[in-house]
Image 1 (cartoon, one colour):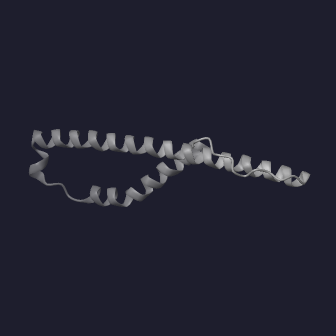
Image 2 (cartoon, rainbow, N blue to C red):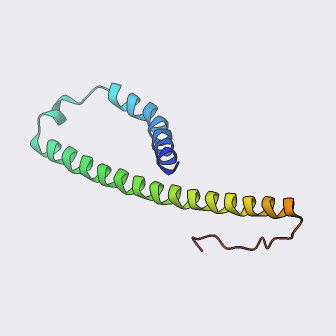
Image 3 (cartoon, helix red, strand yellow):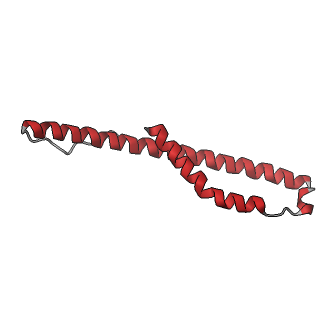
Length: 101
């Protein structure tokens, strides 16, 4: 379930950025900028920094998705326990802490 949540978030980010990337890709290039080696180095440097930023963002999304998954699992376990005790007619303590806290 966590992997699906991560994939969903990555897909949502990619879809959100797609129009901006498409517009940028269709813009005509400046002929003088294409010919300089410094321009090529700048592109490589920018691509590496963008890649690192996306990698870091992906990691943060993964960590957040994992935390959300744990919270959902804890809430589900708590709900099952409450339901089980309600069927038996007992009262249950609902102040159980989540594993992340």
